[in-house]
Length: 79
Image 1 (tube, rainbow, N blue to C red):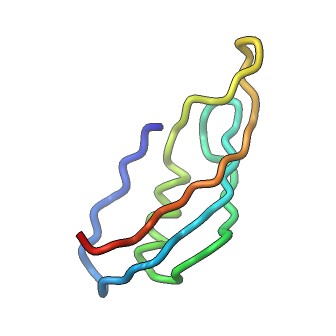
Image 2: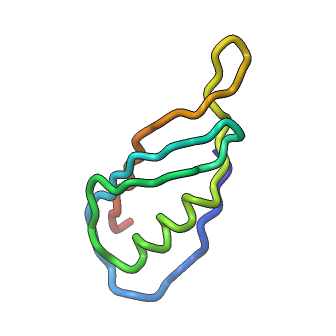
């Protein structure tokens, strides 16, 4: 996966879990994101937007790429 979300120090700290069903197309780009669980924070919206800019290695069968689905979980914790 190649993904570089932008830094955003604005906004209050929060904890929780963001879970999304992500469709990755044949070229390895995110074509769809469906939230399963949300913490409902503005930072979460920014992370979801950055997921759409991520690129993955596409799934393959017999060396041929195909669209696939995966579930991503982002746990928000204070370090």
